[in-house]
Length: 219
Image 1 (cartoon, helix red, strand yellow):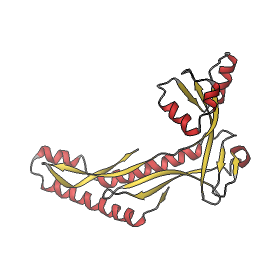
Image 2 (cartoon, rainbow, N blue to C red; image 1 turned 135 degrees about the vertical axis):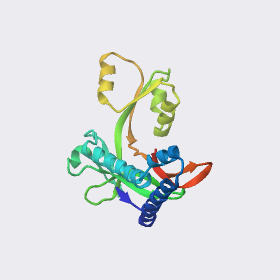
Image 3 (tube, helix red, strand yellow; image 1 turned 120 degrees about the horizontal axis):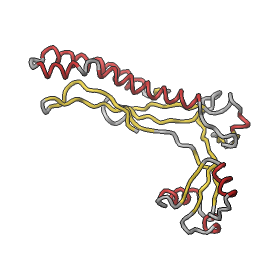
Image 4 (tube, rainbow, N blue to C red; image 1 turned 90 degrees about the vertical axis):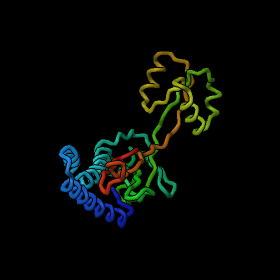
């Protein structure tokens, strides 16, 4: 995980401590026992939730790198235009997952995006996996062959299940063995990482925005 906005991140950590201090003050001054109980249940929520959101992104990177699910014929495309397969790169040359954290427009909040990096140069790369589109919507093989990658994706998304997309070559083998005549088009599809936000939410008490709150992750 790489934090691309160190100043904003440092400010957020300071803000989290102050928010929890404000919550402690609210607990101390709460005269109503029920209100005090509710506030007590939130003690330390700002620092805890900020840390939990960042920890979740770190865990996601770790899980992807331990078990990346790279088929041997998947392609890694580099900024210089060169292309190598996962099989060529081997275990120690395959790309690694990295989450990048950027500042967000919302106060005290962040945007994140998952990328693939070359493990040696740390340069960004793109990973393309082989996939197949299976047409059961009446499209002929000739018409399917004429579709661009963008048109294939759009047709699949709008087909209501009449077009199947699979990254599992065994699915195509099964169809062939079953004697299926459904048109099939194979192509390479770029593997897109997850993106989202780590967003600050102020609490509301008595109809007013409180000086304390928590962070949550949105994808």
